[in-house]
Length: 299
Image 1 (cartoon, rainbow, N blue to C red):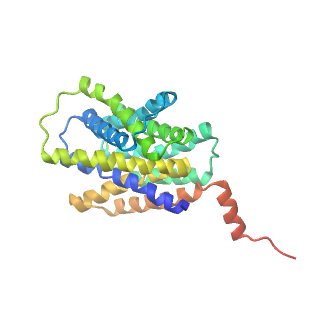
Image 2: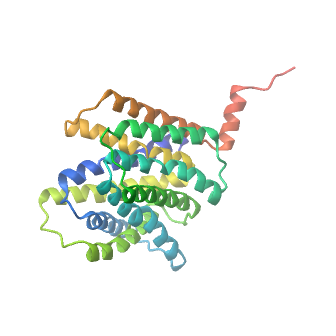
Image 3: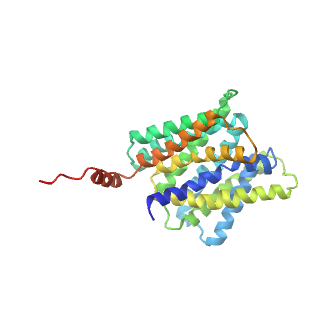
């Protein structure tokens, strides 16, 4: 399968994640962020475990819980804290810094070279997200900012370590392990920190099914498959598709206005994602492109 196909498939995951805000606000009970995160992760992980019938070996338990904690438990918990304490645009912009963090972490943990084009694309993407989402009423809360930066760092570390630690199993099994581990970490936190859930309506259950089956199980299988095949910097740039999808869904489903500045921001984000894929191409592919573009002269 070509790199372009891998990129397109991987981009489907953050595009689906862009529906999280819409589903959370319109279909889930408010005030239960950790409980909702646990109900999103644990059932999805157990479902995939039942399908794969593949449990992590003892040697992988530590890594599995670390990755589950970074990619799901810590990331989702901090994400909700940032969302509650900051305007959505500020929280999403802080989250988009994850692409820059991945570039630095991949250099330290994987030895991936830092390319100027990749850094420029990531910085431009952050600017695009800010144009897309930050309004004039944006407020800065220190705890919210710390949570937003911590969440971005957690996902960045999870992305790079998921590339560094590749178990000899399918992406389906790897996703099942991490979702289950993340859900097991979140469950006791939800029981301790939040009140009992009220009776769930059919709409609540439909929202949880969407976020669990599509927004977690299916999308993260595609995401972790992409991490195994594509450079970490390129994968992290695809995460910027999420706020674009969220804004477009708000416009199409909720009737929210889409200003010219937001349209410009969406275009900047999409352009930066495209540039990020080109800048993060493997060295061997870049060499091949260079040879094709500049063939050797013959006597």
